[in-house]
Image (tube, rainbow, N blue to C red; front, side, top):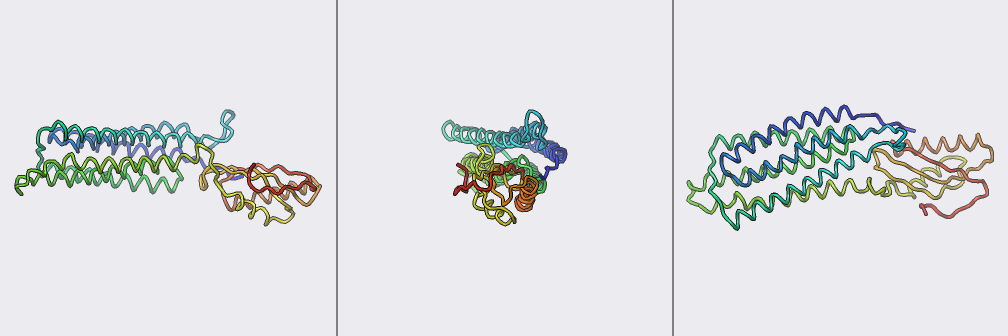
Length: 305
């Protein structure tokens, strides 16, 4: 059996670094948004609140999500990390709702015109650079460590990149609206909030979709594929009642009934050990439970009943 390395310390270091950067981004957006009266930038700052909250949530769930089993959690603690990722999806939904309602309020009730200048736009470009760095940094490390929480947070941060790009383009147009004699460009400050909200909603759905299979114990590996690997082992007559759950590449649990061509317990044990080695080579990390049945037992079933 392959024991997963506990990589929580590395994940925690990444979350602390990104938390500090996200707090800087949040503060800059809030200050510039209040100074300029930009609704889209204030909504973007609200979106960035979720970035920092996600990092805090990630630090908490990372502390709880040890891959090492204990007495109370004999299958490990991976689902804590998946729950944390679902929390990120919830935060994305809240941010999306706030963006929509703020933009609708501006359309219905109006508001003061946005006043922005060149230096403030340069601050937004700096913010954009920080967001891009955080998104790619988290995704790269998350894929390397196999951390669901880092990958989910990187997806969220990437949505923040698109939000900031949209806001920046809108504010550039607002900045030049008087010079171009196009006063209607002021409306871009809140009209761009709608596509931004759609991007946020899309990110939330992707995070939700990628974590539900782990939480509901969806099949991880097709039983036909497991059957094919097992039948390559000499001495195996048949395997059936095959079930699997988990996430391939992170941790998979496999159960099966096995019929072997021997009545000797030691020989049967050696065959099952070879079956486990074959499955570990193909699907590691994996935990396997094999029930050996009598030689004369036959079953046409491959998949789990």
